[in-house]
Image: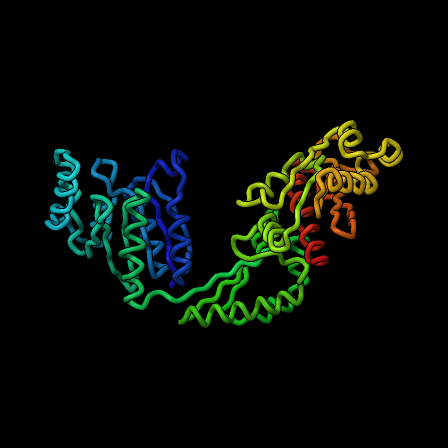
Length: 414
């Protein structure tokens, strides 16, 4: 089932408000097997709304409109719908009784504008709005369903959840859908796609894969559509088992998991502790770790050793090491990680040292060069990375990569 969302209101087009309604509706529809074909925003203008309705009818099975149902003159949606469906406004007594009761409960006087909200197109099915005064309206034309709902978010959500989706389900218009997102780290999108190409090509026809990259990870969202959700879940889980054999080191979690949270669970499970020494990441790794509830049970603390002086005096990095190799080097990263691990008597530790940018790079060590070291109970691993020339992304990528290195080491040792 294809659908289009049409939002009505000048305030959206001029940026006065952000269209969060469309994002929410799209998420709910997608969960119920309704494909979002298009999202359109139009002015409070009759011609513009009529054009949008006509185009949507030609291409989709379901059109949902939000906005323009208020009591003021600039809210013209009902009049435009009357023209489009060749009908007229009529007074709907049940809606008026609902409006009167809401105003009575709030001890507010009813006026003519409020009464006009009980006017609805004669050919529509009125959808009661228990959360507000403007009712929803349901039309059907040439095998396309049109639904108009208020733009007030909590009213719109109430109607979609409690009225529209149940009606579509009862009509057999929706399908079962199951989503599962696989979280990966350590492979850029293009390399990841190349590595899992054969697996992707062999996916069942009803299972779709979407790549969702960001600076922290590449998320792989599997979406299966069919008749029965339990079977879809088994189908997706079976495909993920195959994927795990292809990229076992790169998958760190699923759906809403975070690397910091996954690491926290590993450390708590085994009763181990962690400390961090940060230079180029400036405390961002510590922020990620402490954003996890309960991190105080395993995180001992961190030292942000931005200057060489602090590296020497607090982390006990040897002056000779800095002089001969520079702060951004494998040797310094190793001494930093061992220094913070020993100072805090932790089981595991991370260190970062690099050039976040945009200044400070050289021919031999360009901006984005980062050395990361992780220390465990019996091993220290150091790795060089060159992330790019954007300071913010370099900090994020360095932090996520450091956590991924630690996760692998913990799994190796535990």
